[in-house]
Image 1: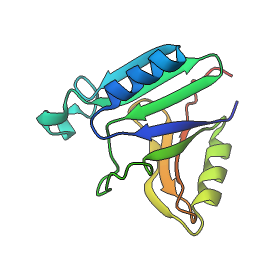
Image 2 (image 1 turned 60 degrees about the vertical axis):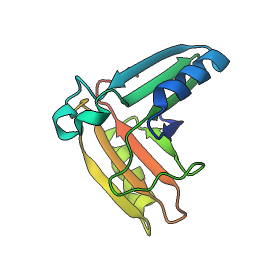
Image 3 (image 1 turned 90 degrees about the vertical axis):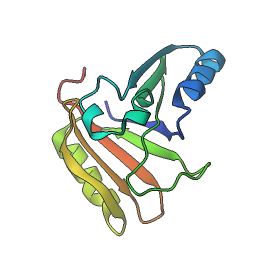
Length: 140
């Protein structure tokens, strides 16, 4: 099933932010640090304890977050939210990515990620950042 969820890009305080939202909203919170991840060697040692990816799930709610920033990007509070589009097929992710990127800027081409999904990031012509993901092993 195709879904859109909010994805928060935070400034080194993802653990604090997501813990706060768990206290407010309830649900199950999972956090993966940079340390122990497949990209650990590519990151400075100073950020190894930061959050690579967090999810807060409760019923139909899914909020995601990370301390990772887009390369060369500037952190601006209020402009650090992306729409994460979880696609249901390879055709769907390719179609959505192609159409959403028209007149916009691709910052991460669609490619296989270390977590086993096809993933890409773009900013559309209206300045909205999109993160598209298709996991062929997802439950239908």
